[in-house]
Length: 243
Image (cartoon, rainbow, N blue to C red):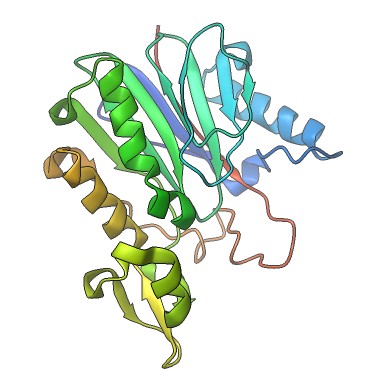
């Protein structure tokens, strides 16, 4: 079985990949598992032609912290939910497990990024914040291409209705929800919310590519919900401009 899948394959000037479950856990946890996760990261990166010394890892916290990385950036960035790179040969990555890995590329300005978009980060605005930061460093919205990696599908992303109304606020709209497994539950289309946020930032619809694969339903992917109550593992989403 393959240990990763390719993203943005129509752009040969960049490398963008997502590790799969056979590649092992990629997430640091400040415990004895970290050394294994570090080795898994090195092996995965090497397998797709990336030098681990030229890789910056964002330790996500389900917030909207976006870092513009360069050669002086720490190789492990705490409290970071999205990373941007303008430096050829410098790669950036975040971990995901049901949350969507969202990849950005502006070939005109030579800027790429990757974001971790779970429901908390979605409500707080991680993708609009990433677009804003890309614009700050030289992008134009109409030049930004977006590709979603696998995340949890609407069919498997279920909330109690009252909880959804409380947590999702302005996104508690009929166009984002459907019926759930019982009368008091609904399912949420997270990708639809994220897409509308991008369109509100003037990203072109034709430059946004959805993903139809579900991490909860497919054993190739790690899934926090599938392993609810256990220490779950996570995949690595990585992107960079090739030298």
